[in-house]
Image (tube, rainbow, N blue to C red; front, side):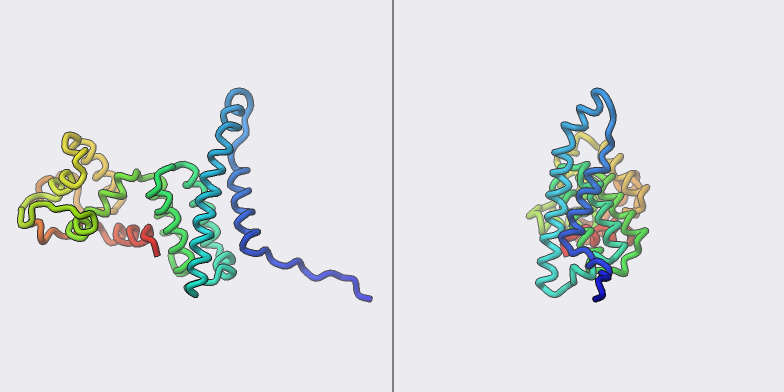
Length: 231
């Protein structure tokens, strides 16, 4: 009688999630002395952040599968998806901002849905979510389409008024009214990343009618915003 065993069955989706989560938690460095004690205290909340984020991703993937928009079995075989998920897990442990957590989740879901996404671009987008602050992301969304942003946030800004985009941003985010230097700093970082099309100086001087303000995001900025939107 032939007693030889065939190759083991490939891991199922739940096995993959657990393996990724364990690998992420085990990657937290171990040191000696007071540092080790601090890391022991941080290990649980860090792992909790990652577990909650990964659980959210898994639940949304199951929903998309139920809608017949993807197959989880196919998705988890994608190296691009696994790489993006591990990168997202690493970023998830560094933030408690709900909007950034959701942006990371949405990015992973968009990778799952569009396997043709360039992997280098995906990594760049995930790095931006990780590095940029929540305020950066909100400024970028507002500057992409001021009129649409105003509608979505029930915000009225003097229709027909002529002025620079900076005036709109300060009105949209009143806490920046006395912090123009902070606004300039954040905008400069967006500009240096190639996400917006004009430097901070022009943001204060390039005037146009509010009703016809052009988008100030670049093509890569628009692609990034699509990447972080809920699919």
